[in-house]
Image 1 (spheres, rainbow, N blue to C red):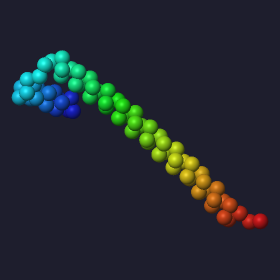
Image 2 (image 1 turned 45 degrees about the horizontal axis):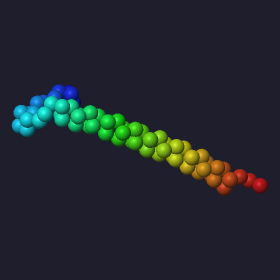
Image 3 (image 1 turned 90 degrees about the horizontal axis):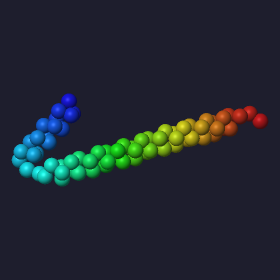
Image 4 (image 1 turned 180 degrees about the horizontal axis):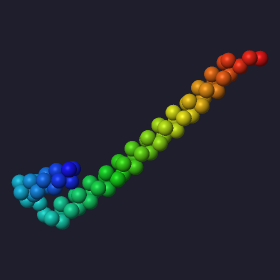
Length: 71
């Protein structure tokens, strides 16, 4: 579905604004590279977020245990 919409937009854009085919391919290549970089950045942020949540949970459990430990 997304590919069909992308192809339709591409065809319409080429019809309205004639662009050099080489320039269009360069722009699409640049867009793909940008999507890959953004994807890696998002994955990196998600991993850091999950790691932080994990460490905070461990810290909370340790604090909870130490609060209720009988001496």
